[in-house]
Image (tube, rainbow over all chains, first blue to last red; front, side, top):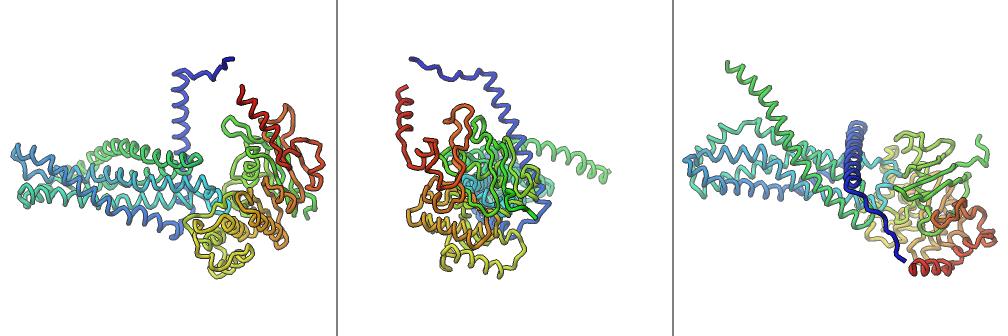
Length: 279
Length: 270
């Protein structure tokens, strides 16, 4: 006798399901983030919990961030030199490369690299702790998982990813300068003079402010995915993948909105102030 | 003064669903001070879920768990943390912290309390490790370097370090050889002799039941119950377990799978 299988939901029901899941996830993530901030304010984490996270996020990431930054600068120099040279503006290439690095590519690519390196590792570690009941054990021994596991990672990412971005910016600037001045023969004096004229402290700060938000997003997303992992090796693997994909998407979305916000802030306060002083 | 028979743990009309799957329904259970209650039942009947509900690692979808007169559902985060410290738990896989040594694992709860000096913590850790038969040479080992039996013993030492009033054991002998199974059973008895603890043991190892239990409760998977039947098939002493009139109790304690094999065969044929 033929058996009747379960009826498949229609497209509207399926869409509703996806929307419901997305809203639930967003609500849960918001609550998770607020509770983490609450724990951060309530009780200071001990050096024993903070230092391993700082070491993992900071020290262990230096080589990969430095190499990424250097090649960003070098690739930009290779791609831009021909165009600028054709227009007879080869000496001005430094301003273009460096402003792009410190405002956009340095923070975004460093954060993307760290989302892959640090975010996935955090999610996998916490997911393994979840499925092996180590997170439950923490709760039973008087430690709150948010305070013990999430706060140190949030501090490490929020404080150290901007510092790693400084490293990426520096290596990118040096990589670009090396290719332009040594390989293509651009006069170093004009290269640096144009850079100094066009790249301000605000441009560097804008990149670092973005990096701070990217760092916090990576930590919160990765920890949230890790602590909500499904059971088994598949669940742990999925958490690590989701942590990277979600972090990457959020980095790009945040980059867009932060760029608009920071440019408007610059126009409203800093540029207006400078104009007033000038007049 | 609390009367002797006042339950320390009281479970009323407890129910637990995961998504749309009901695991526990209408469970009522009282555990009095000093008692050792062993919960038995087939895999998937909700034994571990019940244990996690007792220590508030899960929130019930129905009913209440009361510990020492206070409903766990009414406690805030800080109160719940304090209440949990009165209970120790030995997890099924021991749940030792991978990144820490044996010493740090046992010292973890004591350090989190921030009440004792490092020297006092060291004395307590060594004392607990000796109680579970682990030498000082094991202190510096990481969990990955330990055998299954050693992990369980470290897990027990870690739970005992905080001197809990209640010890919860989640399948303490699963995956261990017969000798180590007996070692763990003896340790459960020794813990009860040395410390005035109330114990709840979840297991399907009948040797453990007969060795440590004052009282046995048998749960049955909800999906296999007849309509209107109670999920608790048996609640009584281990001595009278064999005298139960319920054939399902006998099938479980004697490990008879005939009926289950027939069901599986008919399910495959359809």
